[in-house]
Length: 187
Image (cartoon, rainbow, N blue to C red; front, side, top):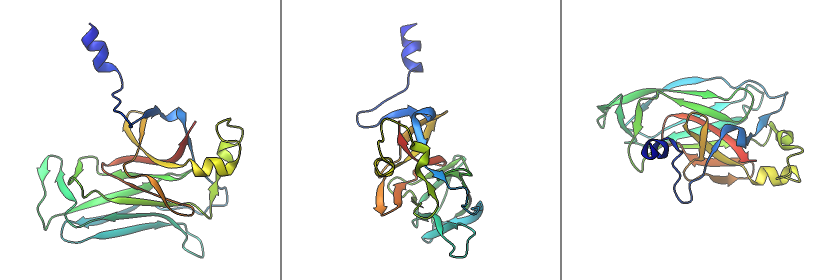
């Protein structure tokens, strides 16, 4: 009985904190933010593929840039992929905040060659989602605490590998598995 209970607990490794989705404050999109469309495209093992999602505004404001290095595709649904193989990938932006879903779910990336995601939020961020949270006395404190989080289990989230500022109003992280990613700060 004790073994079964231990197996059901969340696994936590030193330095790798997992939290419930309710423990995250996801950076919101302002009500004036133009839509960002989902996209499907081919990723090839033979070449680096960089794809962007942009707001439908006059400036084509960047929302997400994702870069797949050459040789990053290891397998799809258990079938190994070779150096000249390609896979169709879909990126769906989070509709009311900053984040995305990367699919197909059966895709495995080669160790050390996973894609890198950059979320850009300078123009349309709504940091008021953190207003009143005692952890963040100012909206600047909240913005400084942002990380890219990835879902590692049902509504269980962990900071994505390499998450950190890329520049002012941009966060970068490795998207080492398909699934859901959010730009958020911990409550």
